[in-house]
Length: 115
Length: 111
Image (tube, each protein chain N blue to C red):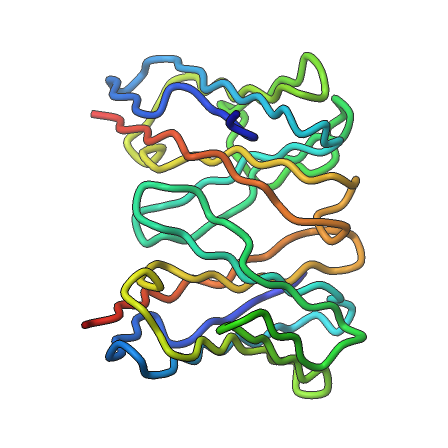
């Protein structure tokens, strides 16, 4: 059973399109995250939700909108895609409200390529 | 906010040798320091962590040391094996739970 699963694994799309990435965790964790990993492997947090409530919202263009229908799911919708959005997007979860209360469990990543 | 610097960016070692990766952090309130290993095409996975009330922690061939005064922490891998080849990330979280990752170290273990 995959602990943190995200779909799709690969996404190739044209500039200007809108796309979504879905994430689900079956660990019973309270907190979920979206991270962006650029071509240089740098990992940067984008959003964090605790029990469906937004708790971290880093400086991210408002074209990115996270949605958490329940604490096991955190989806990421991106409007008007730009070339610079090309990256690998990782979903993660952790047991407590804050990352420092426990391990971050990452999904396998969703590689987004914008042409 | 927290700023984490990680060195080196790449590290090539012979199988059986040791590998050391060093990180520094800026926020003296940081209290949790995990290390993650990311294999090709996979998500990062926790390999070891240390909290600010501990100076050193070991788990088989890997160990982490923390110097709170100097605000640096290090990952040590002994008797390296080809399966240790991966990108390693250090991270620090402050008391608010915000997580900052280092830039990563590509470790290549050559047989």
